[in-house]
Image (cartoon, rainbow, N blue to C red; front, side):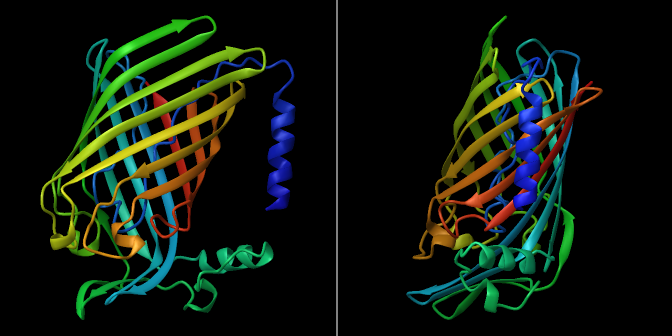
Length: 334
């Protein structure tokens, strides 16, 4: 890891001299990958940029999340131990100067994975708390929740398939582009449909609707592009099939991030994602606590105007999101 950090620093320094700072800072298109959260419609898309009319923007993303948490309290016991892989194919099409529409099709895989040993060694090397991961079976899949002696969630076998498909749209409210800046504001909405198997945690069984306000400010200076972005919104959910008697029907979410692009082909950014609880009636953080997640990484622009986002996620509010996750997103506008 130290070698990787030194290589990243060298790359950053080499990018500074004489390169154009024209890479805008855009949000990471990811969300909380906890198996009890990703089944709902929290939107990964929070860009305030509306796809131009007649243009098509395609994105293929992958999120890999490793989670280990186990707690008992007041007659409740929960264990979330496993890895999830979520691939999303997304398309957005500009239908006018102010509006775009899109679709997101996810494919979800749960399994024991392979990251337990790496994460345990990483924590040991830097004196970080293991939280019991070092004594648990390696590369195990076990999602279990019991309340008052009733088994309410149990999954121990690998599974994969199509998740809940989402339809979305955006409306431009404000867009000001000048030589030294670009500011924008948009409203975005999503409609998540119950197309995934809720018994295998590939969907919630609910129809979810979100509405959010998204904005960004980019300034282009001699030191590169400086960007600030954010989103704030709410989600309404019909009754689903997962922990149905504890599911909330309303939730709020937000996102804020900032970044620096020293050149037209590279940027570095950090992002905070938060949402209110999706369930109630529990004393466990995994079920009924608000989530706060950190995403840190950057973006690379390749020839042909392909953009690759690379990020690492961490649960700042412990046990409300996976311990660690990796996000990769490749996009291009045609």
